[in-house]
Length: 144
Image (cartoon, rainbow, N blue to C red; front, side):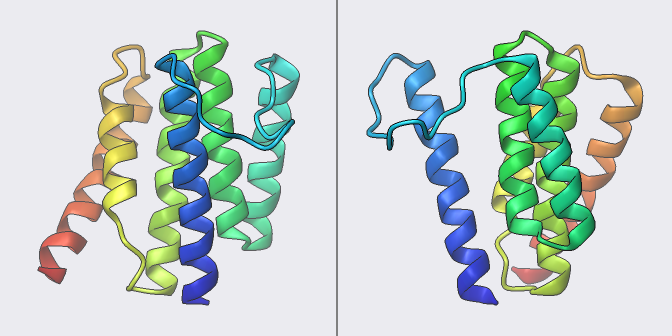
């Protein structure tokens, strides 16, 4: 289980870093067709797949789709959806940590901090992200 979660997180971080490099104008080697073009249809697909995998307990896949959800929302210029996507991705990491306390919460912390920096986030989203961030910080403090 730990190896699967670690491998999944590494793939997610690599994909997220590749997308960040691409946005920064740097080329990152990607398999052909690996990054979906930005569209509302792709956002809706990512949202539906994330929720489907979350309901099925496949948290690594749900995390990957929530990261895609956030990336699509960013490309579509929808900061409210970006914030929710980052929160939901972070929450998948929190759920993984509850199942396996060796799962690193640092990526969840980063996602929540990025989500809270989105000024257009709704008050409800901010409140939930703050709650999740406090939980992550307390777990990190307890571990150190």
